Image (tube, rainbow, N blue to C red; front, side, top):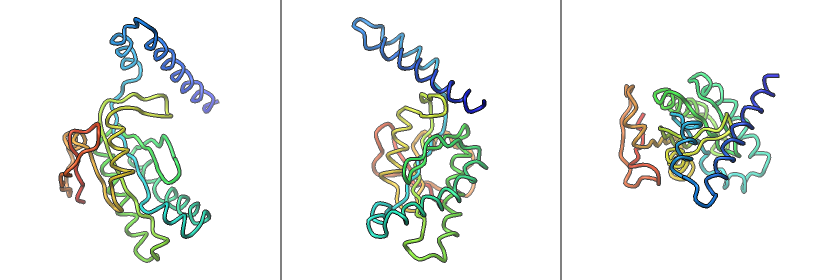
Length: 208
């Protein structure tokens, strides 16, 4: 029954958003008013994390699909309990990438650091092809959240770009919004990036 309620809730949210988008597309629609309704219904404050595995495509090409599945399985076995322990909510798993949201930006950053430190220990005695090399991008701010299935917004796009395209192995990259909102900076330092992804004023590499 619990899963049925979740499915119904997500479906209802998607249906409501789709109806409003259809209204917005009509000639003469009051787009400002409709946008306000959409933000009132679905706008929420979250920290959002995107992860990716460095060199994954090359690894698949060299070692094959079974190695691909093994690496994903092992990464999820290690990382998902950590995400849960920092009160993260896993919204999506797509290949070697995770989309996770957190109510508390401090917990999002602490989780990312713990994930990287745990993987460093895990990788220490492994051959290169067995290592799990994680890249992380984190954004924070108001975004449109559709049930427990997806989020949309400038900070979502920026975090995706940082985690999936810009970050290298063991790196944690954050947007200006995360930097500004973060209050627990113990043991952390920050290096400003020369370029920021679309949707963010600037970005930083976390030194942990």
